Length: 341
Image (cartoon, rainbow, N blue to C red; front, side, top):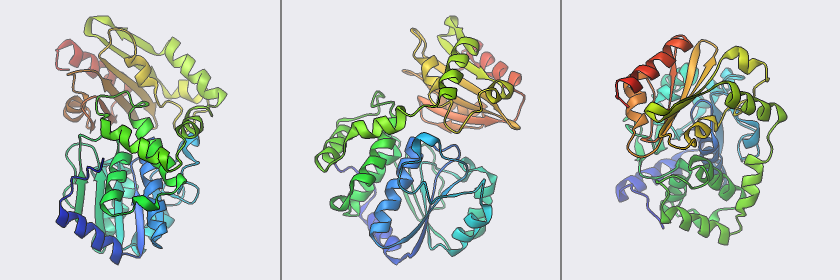
């Protein structure tokens, strides 16, 4: 079951860094999803059990259906309290990066804050995306693992923390594993993944409780937004086995959107029979946020990196563009027409 790919010397180095650190900051990416929130939540619980002073930093707001995860209620959100984030970084001995692999994923504000403090910070990276940054002292990167939360479990095993896991920590881990795999449907899910769930269930985890907290608390406005997106913003290109959804800022604003309200729309586009690649284009203040999904051999990570200044995994990637919405969509059309994806 334990699969931590760190070498023995790297595990010892991580242990030494954590043991010698008193003030620890946990950081994750912009627009935090279940894996991001779950991984920082689980790690915060385990480090607090070691009597560490832990602060969680989010670049922006956590979706309402994830605010039950440990660490979220007391977290520092840069968008709301940049001074608090700056102070936490300046006082920290150790920064643990979770569910992102380079500073471009966290927004300019948190990025600059981290860069200003790197001279005194030790850094540990735990992430499953391709091409991790090289500046951390310990880099636990494994693109074969389906979620960062699963990696957190393996890391905990390497640190000999598993016997101390409480139910709240296991719920956070399960949250990330469940959401980043769309309830364990992706090819990256392995027998080990299910063995971890079995281990946690034997220690008291109740998966249905996590599912209900994540999926059964939807606001009426979100349900209406989903209906609008599918009836008005969905485009199917059967010739290219592609589908995409578009929402302008004006359309979004009609539904008073909250963080996480558009999560999962791209998967609905991908679920259309015959579709092997899907995209979701969301117009935001000054940019277009994009989610890509694919099946089989179509590599949206390469496409996102090469053409949209983004990245992620082979079958799931994201990006952010500063060109007008219509130009971003035209670029996607061109790539499909030229058979580049």
